Length: 281
Image 1 (cartoon, helix red, strand yellow):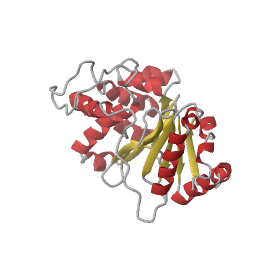
Image 2: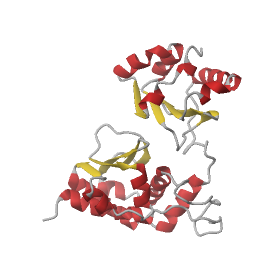
Image 3: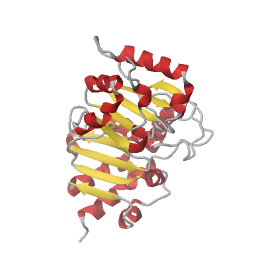
Image 4: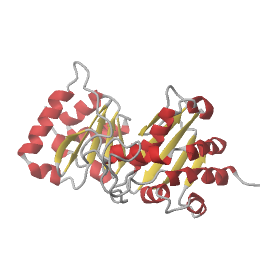
């Protein structure tokens, strides 16, 4: 008898169809909307694979009622979380955590990318302990629908993302709401970093910030709006007030974290290097 977990690992064969954009690809390729950069794994990121999933689901909304499952992906080294929600509303494929997923899948980012490029077999990863599947195992078998992803359409979706500047967001952040203090804070942050380039370089990596629906990041290159697909750590604030409290006094980070006002994903030690935020306003 084949266990649910073994069956679930077999369903992941679909990832072999979502391959990196090919080197030398051009906008004249079928379904491609923009010229793509070289598609080696050095440039290929999880966001490109999930772009292919998103494209497929948008074209097949009937899958939401058919699958009715929420999947949580956890990638490590570096750590990131991705949601495949085919249960609520119009369906969702995005970076982040969900409180109560039906099924969880965990593996390293490099193994995920190798699996996506057809260089690693999901069953071997599972039996080798490199792929962990938890939660509702029967629901995990519903991933079989992803085998039907059109690989050319998936490539085209990945190429659109890959063609974006590295500092660009995977999707643009919405404008802060009226009465928000974010515009004032971000203006002050830009000014501080521009006035002292050494501050950002001292971080030693890329810090991603999520405040409500707004995202921005700070790296050795300074401040940038939107999501950075090569971030090292992400600080997610439950409410804007928590972020305001932090920039007024950076020493409050631990207290805010203990009270559930901040979530830290990725390199925790890097996430502590937020002195550059102190007393911005």
